[in-house]
Image (cartoon, rainbow, N blue to C red):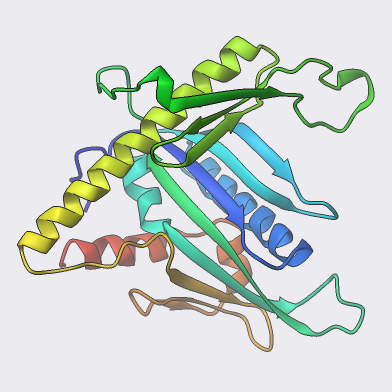
Length: 251
């Protein structure tokens, strides 16, 4: 089930809130908590690279690394759109809301993998890192954003106080994104030649988490359902991940 060339590697994960303002931002933060709890249960180390907070609550986006054996192999099974249905805690009329957030895990490639980058293709911007303020507020433009013009991929890092370290980390994430993009394109070409076209998980709704009127989590790819949604949101993902890996392996 974990025989992919990069499955054994650590992962770089991005979670992004979908349309829906505060609701979606809150859902993105709930997902981050869920995956952080799952990582802790497996002894994986999580390090935040970039966090964009929501205007009222939650997070607009977060990028973090997961260090541990087979982190990529497990977490790639979660790539796609995650859907939440619940009574909104932000709605005074207590109406039911549907929120979406995307999850993407890619392998954290090492220096042994060569990824060609032309400096002319890059736009590098620096800005002041966000924070809660007070004596620890970052008063220098240490955060770094890198745009790869040919693909439109944008990465940024504001985890470190050093601009140099943030740039190095952002470059590492960019190389991983470009390597993953090339891998996906090659896989798609092989599938076309073989006469089959599999749906790429990212960009499609893979799972629904329903908290009202009843509690239920359903994976739309495998049909796996769990009645205790809170247990899943607390990080108990192993059965969902295993079902998907078994299906992908044709077991």
